[in-house]
Image (cartoon, rainbow, N blue to C red; front, side, top):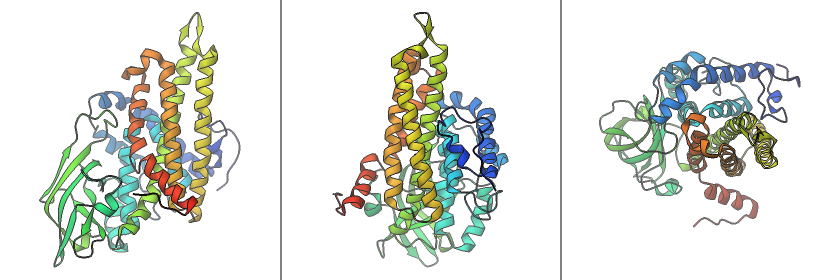
Length: 400
């Protein structure tokens, strides 16, 4: 595979420093394939379903036919060997550039759920679940957050697991679990009552006592079906316990990797909002000329482009550290905290350029503005990620 610095076909106007040219040619083709898919097949579904707080089931078929699932996992996706972390990140970015809800649906399945199985499962478990998940014949979800536990869920997990012979009995509740209303496999995290360590279990759809209920009334991620799950004496065979997960330290390895994916998602939201604002500024006329000719509008656009370019550069290096196997918690935490903060600025500036039109769904930007709030909060808040980095650079823990 070779990498060139020639201009990309369909290169994004927001890619001011030509970051996409860092991809090898074969991976670049996959990115452009995803770009066309999102534009041609996914985008037409977005606004109507976002407005109706509804997940379009046809998305599963669209992604199944695309072959994009499973690419990060050696031997399980259509592209073998596994693709680079740089491409995986740019794919998350590309999907969020069209819609953050759709990106989250795919990321929960392809990232959180599949990564948990790939990292935490035995070889037998990987071979049992990953092929059908890579083909998207089975959809995954990841259940960690609880109604009464967010940032403290690692040390204060209330969902319990009790061993009973060759079976585990799960009791408790989870909340904000994407895809859980229809997922075939839900990775549920629970505290073993005997050793007090967190363990992972793959709960299959239809298991008695497993009750997911869709959360209504969200102002963000309205396409994603987040659920509140009640687990009442849910029996899971030992064969469905992730064999390589023995404590929350093992779970943290998964979160470290997926947190970087959320930062890429935030970059995609920035880019999507910036592109909308730039096009609108060129077309919208006030005082007899396009508002793109106004100095204050150009200032907002340039600040937005600066945030995008700086964030993209940080994430490129994060991906390189991942590919080299030397990235640490603080690397992904800094990226998540920094990029989501910059995202919040960009979506606000972009909505500002639209004026009153920026608060209606017709112009798309309102959706980006709202969805950014969810990305800002999940996979570790800015405050929690800041303290992870702060502990790393000072050697002092400021956690309460």
